[in-house]
Every structure is written in structure tokens, then in C-alpha cells.
Length: 323
Ligand SMILES: Nc1ncnc2c1ncn2[C@@H]1O[C@H](COP(=O)(O)OP(=O)(O)OP(=O)(O)O)[C@@H](O)[C@H]1O
Ligand SMILES: [Mg+2]
Image 1 (spheres, rainbow, N blue to C red):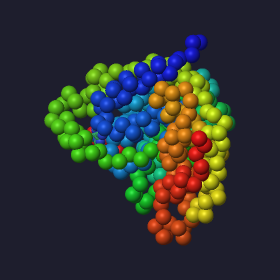
Image 2 (cartoon, helix red, strand yellow):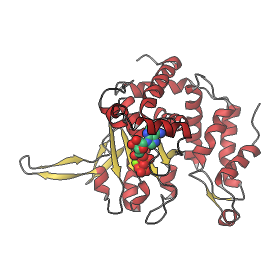
Image 3 (cartoon, rainbow, N blue to C red):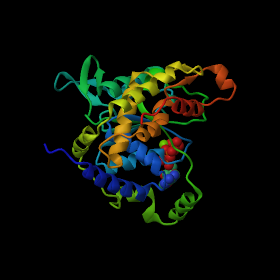
Image 4 (cartoon, helix red, strand yellow):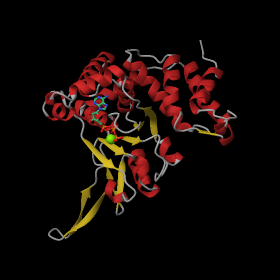
């Protein structure tokens, strides 16, 4: 198999941004962050208030990248089997057969993940970590490109089950989705006036092209192997993560999964900029998204009004950048 080049990645990236941009107005940084998770084969947590196009974006990305898509709305009464599937007895064949649940897909949108109780959330854990699920003692493999995008509303805490630390750690990045800018909101309103340009019509009506064939994404991911990291930068990255465990304002620091996630994210950033080597800024830029959801502030610092963002900025300012 011929290895794809950085130029090929750049071409896919340009076309993906263009096609996604036909449906999702603005949110360029959010789109790129999602692409980092996708290109590295990792999962992402999307945080944002209702109506900022979280669902629309993931659906559009699946369409554009030629991937299968399914969505689960998490609710307090959602059961693990609603995620994984069940085996039912087939009378004609005298055997159990699998009725696959929504995890048997490529891009899975876990909407409002914090609305389901821990037991149900944790049935996503095995799926995310191992890319397989066990139903009635039989283990079934999931799609090799299985990627979870979970959404979470940052303001509503009532009646929610906050994700346990172990669950959050499995997400490579937390991506904050904010309100559109004024111009973008105006564009959105204008579009409402014409039926042809409504997102639904565009996605189903052929106005948005798929830029990849289903099997091409796996091949594209091998481009990241071309991105090298100098030993000094690797040390820098490890020191950043370790500093989160020493900082006096942090109760729970980042684990080794954060080290892996930051390295992958930095390499993807470099590749997406057409570079075959990681620069210090790739690491710095990705650190907040990789760290924020994994760290827990000490309550006394939180009461004083310190935020995780400030704490991470301080860590970035503390650890010396190699020259
Ligand atoms: N940036 C945007 N570009 C295009 N459409 C947008 C944008 N922001 C909001 N919309 C419109 O708002 C609608 C709501 O988007 P969507 O359902 O994806 O939001 P959501 O973030 O998933 O909300 P919820 O948290 O309630 O599930 C979309 O159907 C779309 O028409
Ligand atoms: Mg939604």
C-alpha cells in the first residue's frame, strides 16, 4: 500500500473544510479540532449550549468523510443494551443472533452523555477503549475507525450525571463550541429564507460532496507517521503533563493518556499545517484542549475564583520551552 503524502492530507483537508462550510457556518476552529480527533483515531467531547450546531457538525463531518453515522440521545432511563445491542433467540435457526445497537457504526454521536447514569455511560467505555463490545459473553469487534463524539451542556447540572474521571480521560480533546459571531448569525438567518440552503436539504440533496471513500480514512491516518518529534520536544511534552501533578492548585492531575493524547494532537496539528515535524507551538496550542477536562482544581482555589484555563496557562508559562 502506497503511503499517502502530506500534500494529499492537505488536499483532503481543504476539500473537507469547504464541504463542511457549506452546511456549518463559521466554527472553523471547532471543525479543525474535530478533524484532529478524527485523523488520530481518537474520541472527542463537544461542550456547548443548545443549538450551536454540535449535532449538525458531526453529521456533516460523517457525510463529508464518507463515514457511517449514528446518534444516541442519552436519557436517565437509557440502558447499556440500548447502546451495544442485544442477542435474541432466533426460533427458526435455533440460535442467538445479535441485534446490533448504535455503536456498530463509524462516527457515533453520544448526545448529552451526562444525562445517563454511570452504568450506561460505562458501557461506552469498553467500546471506546477496546473498539469492541461484549454482549452475553460474546465479544464483537467494532469498526476500526469507530469514533465517539459526546456532547455535553456546560450549564445544566440539574438531573445530570457528571462523567467520571476515568470516562473523561478516554476523550482525547474537549472542544468548546461557542456562539456564532454576528456576521455568521446573520448569514444563518438569511439562509432560513431559502429552502434550498437549509442544512437538511443540503445534506440529503447532494449539494455537499463526500471527499473520501469509506476505507480511505484509515489510509489517510498513516500520514501522521511521517511527523517526527525531536527528543527535546518529547521531554517538554512529558514535563508539561507532569507539572499538572505537581501544581499546588490542582487536586487531580493528568494521567499518561494525556501524554499520548497531547503527542498525537501535536503531530496532527503539524501534519495539518503541512509540516513533517512538531514545533513547540503545536504542543502549546493543543495543551488546553487535551488537559482541561482531565484536571480537577482544589476546591479552595476554585472558591477563590481560579479557573482551569488560568491554571493551564500558568503551567505553560512555567515549563521552559526548548530552543
Ligand atoms: N454555525 C451554524 N451553522 C449552520 N447552522 C447552524 C449553526 N448554528 C446553529 N445552526 C442551526 O441551528 C440548528 C441547531 O443545531 P444543532 O441541533 O446541531 O445544535 P446542537 O448544538 O446539537 O443543539 P443541542 O445541544 O440542543 O442538541 C441547526 O439545525 C442549524 O440550522
Ligand atoms: Mg444536538
